[in-house]
Length: 128
Image 1 (spheres, rainbow, N blue to C red):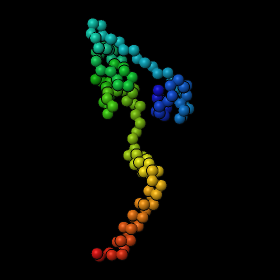
Image 2: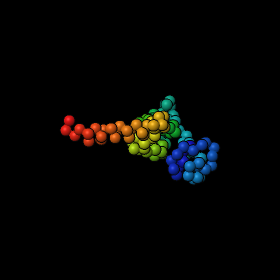
Image 3: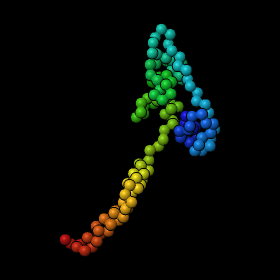
């Protein structure tokens, strides 16, 4: 279950989000309506007159081409595609550097020593 307020994953069966404290509503599962006489086809959950074979990869709701949102993880309905978590490249770099520094306790000192060595080598022989 995903919290509608902060968009984080919440524990199933809980009434309130552990991150922001917002009340969690029970997920509304859309029962697919099959097309009579055709196996594997349904009517779209939003556009009830459109026949489709495509379903959302997350909630399994039938979706037509108008409702389809293409994501790297596959096709999603409009409701599930809103539950995205932004990827911040600077945040990824920061966490990667933190992991490297955590693995080697002197990681930052090595970088400082290398930087000072480079600066001093330029000052010692500026025209070499």
